[in-house]
Amino acid sequence: MAGVAAEPPGHDGLIGMCWVSFGRCRIQEEMVSYALLNTLMVHPDWRRQALAERLLTWTIDYVTRRFGEKVLMMGAVRAGNAASHRTAGKRATQVLPADGLLRPPLSTAIGRYRL
Image 1 (cartoon, one colour):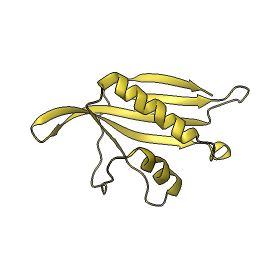
Image 2 (image 1 turned 30 degrees about the vertical axis):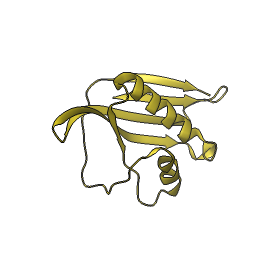
Image 3 (image 1 turned 135 degrees about the vertical axis):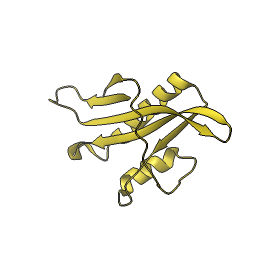
Image 4 (image 1 turned 60 degrees about the vertical axis):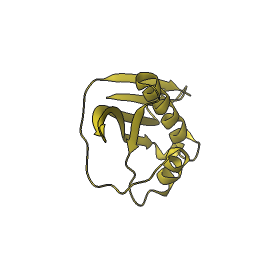
């Protein structure tokens, strides 16, 4: 599992965070690495400032550095969360209906993203 936290200068506490877990899965006959984005949150006072997009960008960059270009990246978004659907829509190459949960805590790395 890896995570990133956003802390602006002069503010006491986190204003956003993103967690992603990792594993391996079979796609057709090939075993590939995957990254499951399982938490992306921004404090209500800091929304509508592209912070979720910046946290997502950091996470995608981290996953790409760790696994290379051949990795399956997944994330689930609540049905009524229009802002998250917009953010995900900027990056998603395919949208599928959710039909299960993955829970693969493997390793841990923490990242900090300073604004």
